[in-house]
Image (cartoon, rainbow, N blue to C red; front, side, top):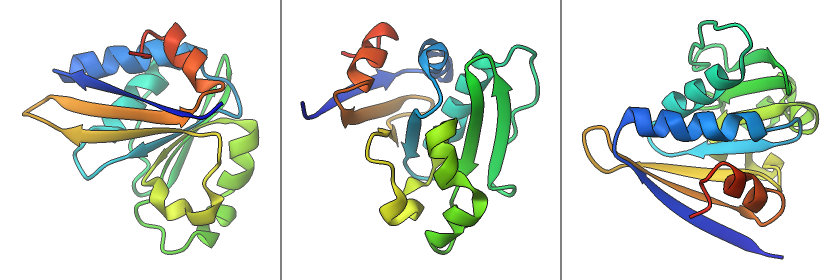
Length: 158
């Protein structure tokens, strides 16, 4: 068992949203997705699409840039969407309660480089890059279990 990596090119925001919607229903508490990439790379768009796909009742999905964390109740458990861009130190993650959420909730983390040593070892890393006006390249990498099976079921394993 080792690490694997898969690269996808999405030609539009709609393509990216469809991928997020396919992945969303397969997530369970304890699954952590680390959304990496620069400002405007598509991290928040992907997270919003994923969150909307698991909400029983549609609701506004704001960026957590200023609140740092937004939580949602889903049929699969609590989902935390966090944006760590404004954090100055990994200890701030502990104060947010994010370290505990990694165990008990589905977690989407933007700017995960701020986690430092608190980065969960079993997380799915998704690196977003802009490759055109609305096109994105997303590189997904993780340990094989459970992510290889999850990405396969979502049709994102190749």
